[in-house]
Length: 264
Image (cartoon, rainbow, N blue to C red; front, side, top):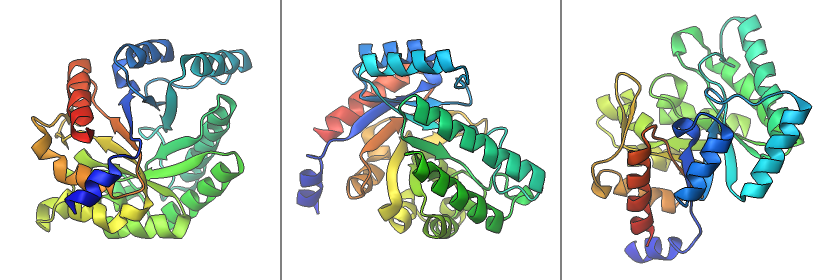
């Protein structure tokens, strides 16, 4: 097994930073280049994409000039594609389709989305219907839709998560910190590695940090041992993009160094 993992390390892993550490795209790109990050996960919750044609052209030019790869994280605080209220559900879906269009215009090709959180206001059949629609729309515009596991809700259970992935053909974003605090891990006394193994063949994107606390703050691992088993499993998946999803730049740089050493 160790030999197999060593062989897989030879594949290129993109170590990316979250845009959380920046106020705008210019600053995010500058931080990425100064600290030798391979990519940026642009979170549109905090840095929305302008619909202005001039702004879109400027952003595309800036991205191309920077040579920094980008993937995108969709709004999740104010949209819910599985909501039981039809108006809210459809409005959310249309909003995400707008972002697919905007991402296409600036040369992007990957969008991370949430569904089914908080679950009391949502239905899994609505999640399947909306996500399938979004995946098909994204495919038409050259944008891959990737569903992320959340601390609560449908995707906090790997079996529900797997059902959504299989029925919609969405790809998966595996969030280590979310899995570590999920009820499935806490109460079933299983680990994040067990969670990951159930959905591994769908995973093409990862959020790397240790845990999300009750205030929804992402915390870094104190050392590689805390996340190494999950990283080993990710290397066995078709996942070549790891976003360090931390908002503190000192932690961000520290974890990048740990991951670089781990990958050898």
